[in-house]
Length: 196
Image 1 (cartoon, rainbow, N blue to C red):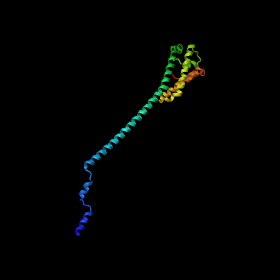
Image 2: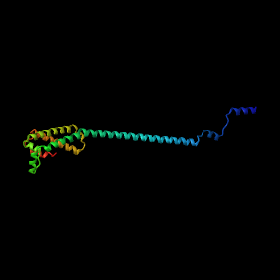
Image 3: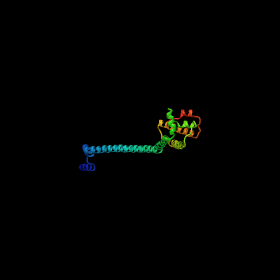
Image 4: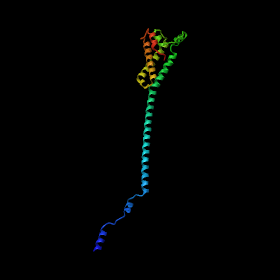
């Protein structure tokens, strides 16, 4: 009976494994562990590279957008202010070159410079042709004033802004002198007008 009890006890209890056999069955081989670690590092490096690449592309797109906006702004300023003001100034200058030739010649002979505003404020007359030229010069001046008032915000250079202010003042004085609103003021006018 003793033998039977021993056999029953051995049959009912699970077989005993040594501790080294139990650890070996649960260990992952070193090669697989290094392989998984290597793949994990590669995935992380790829993720960092991809994020960096995406950020670089976003920055490039942002800068391209900024450059496009700046180009559009420059194009607007050129088309709506600088181009038209330059064209109007050129027209005015060309007309002025053929305006009051006799008066300019007389002033040069006397060693001075002919000034239209002074001539007008002194009440001196012009020929019919010079009156027609002056009328066109005045109309061009009004267009320049209108352009400065509407689109002058496009000028961000302080020195150029001051020059436009002087041009505007000169045109306004010329218009008032042409309309005989400044008669007798040639001395005072000389102090504020500039050669343009």
